[in-house]
Length: 109
Length: 113
Image (cartoon, rainbow over all chains, first blue to last red; front, side, top):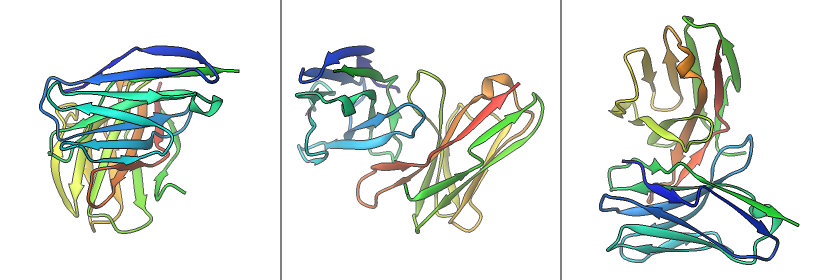
């Protein structure tokens, strides 16, 4: 089942912060975050595993609340290069990722 | 270089025609995935292979869709009797070994007129 992302879109000025949320109604094994720029394929940012392990991008942080099956991605001190559409992907240890509809982030100078 | 090559990059076809997309991993991967992405949506799972075996197909995949991975390396996705609703980006993805982190190919964009 597709996870739900919010907000759908966010506009930031350089240096501002934003939070993108992802929630699922299913018990999750892992949550993934990807970013897609216009005309390009999605690119992996971060994975959060059940049990607390995280792997990914040095400058982007995320959290995973296993009890609530929710994850949040934190964009801190945003840069122009952060613009794009962010997708969360959820996995129930069945080797399939289900992606949310995405959050479009626009960072302006 | 994403580690996976997809061809063709763009395909424009008339309704009712058949199309085939190909995915070529640069290195060996046991698992290979196909996703479809329409405008404004996230990628939707279509099917995946473990070596030559197709292990799961989404209910999104009608009988007009067929995928193969004959030697456990490259894969093809064929759509027969295309419909306008098939217009989308078809993405091939390869996972990292221990965790299911996906590397996506650049995709094959299908436009059905």
